[in-house]
Length: 605
Image 1 (cartoon, rainbow, N blue to C red):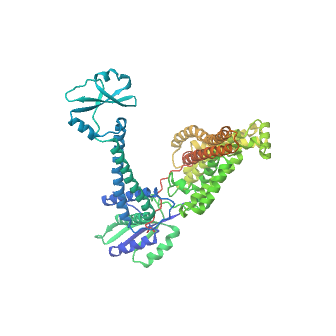
Image 2: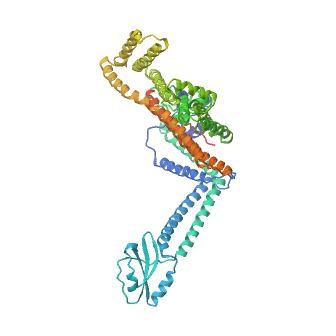
Image 3: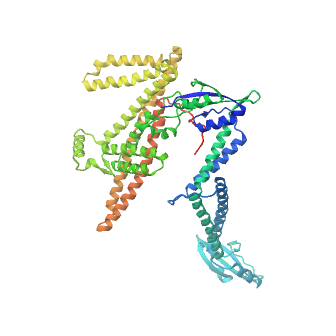
């Protein structure tokens, strides 16, 4: 659910402005309204600097290890400046290392020799010239004419030198190259020295991550607080020769009494109001329990607008079911639950909700693994377990199997979610614009749900459809009237008819495609089961017959294979239900989104 907001308008005398602003920051409940003004260059530069500090923190976190964190003595700004200097120096050293590697690669075919020796020979009138020639074009007759020494063959090229005395000329159809100015040994030695420099810098990174990361994070918080303060000042209007300071803010209704108690004792004047139709109140989601763990997933797409329904508690059960459907292995589900329970005790407080979310998804995976009869790639319906043996016999007798049942189940779940989304759309439209605006959506619901109920009545009771046709025609007639002529009672009938025809076309072409999209649940579940079965078969076939070695090889293949399958199938199980939620479900629910997250002006620890 979305926490209700109250709008505050503050009027403060300029001499007390800074003190009251500091008090509001200490309270930490006011989301200051940002005016539609161009950001000043100073604030933009501070944002860019803050971004660099944030990147520096993320960089250092990559160098964290299992050693305990020890508080260092450096101030956060000093840590940042040293880190920037180290990164700049490392970049230069890496460029030098790459250059050395390139030189070594080019010099390697010529072997290790002394350029000084070439220079001394030249002083004695002996000249050495370097040539490269494709192997197929190298002529042995050249050796009869000139003093040639083959150095080696690399990459299909013959590397050779021609030794000449002063005044001698050489005419060979080969590419002459510039003699190297350094020896291979000196380049390799320098490369090792450069690598040692990089190791020294990387050790310093590890030391900074262990000792100075906390200081850098505190510095980031200081910058954020400073920037938020400047933004608050920037979004304050100055009136009466800048003696009166005016700004607006949003406060959650449950925190209003706390703010009012302070304001009543201060000299600040203020007025409160409920959000108006044109107000863009910030969004604070207040879901608890099961739904609360899915808020982060919903935020990946968009927050709802203030007048909309919060979709989190409505998509959360579907998402968990869809994840379990896609992964669909009871063994993987057990692993996820165990890992989540263990992680919840070890991870930081901020990550505990994510551990609980993984546990919920693991339970759903376990459930669908039991329904689909898959346990670490083992098909339980082909085992001798009593329940699955009896179910398989029943399916065979009725000419079906569990895969066909799962196929229809995926489409059924999709249809249920889409209809549920349309119900939410009708509720949303009624809340935001009134029931007259939602008549078209109610008509579609009557058409779809009514037709399904008439058909199910015939199937369950055995009443022939011919008998129920009058009821069906009544449903079609009333719903058609609502869809084509009464879809919005605030418009004239001709505009409604045109819009109704357009909506009918969109529904007819889009609804079937939306439902068919849910087949991916079945497809991903089958793919996960097949991959698990394949790895099991590989483990058996490739383990051999050596008693101890065979068991070890089998365990290695099983661990490696199922780890890959769990990762790849888990990734697909995470992404595709999200796609079904944000595209099919949100579209049919009429979700518009675009809400801005509640971000109160506060101090950071």
